[in-house]
Image (cartoon, rainbow, N blue to C red; front, side):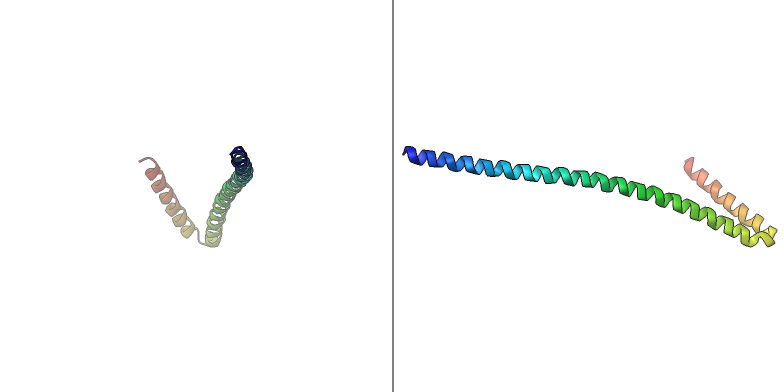
Length: 97
């Protein structure tokens, strides 16, 4: 009977050691994945800021090209600028709501 109890205790100790080892491996993997997630989140935010900057530069370039094309026609340029000013006024009105 005593041998049987010792064997049960030894089996339990072995199983507990395996569980602790498995826990440590999973915890380590979880920490690594959290760090990787933080890194990718930071990278994504940087890419989003860069994309916003590039969109702004593109719109500025598009605007300057529109005016450049119409530099021969001052009347058309004034009309285009007035359209843009009206769009800006609409945006400001929406922001003030």
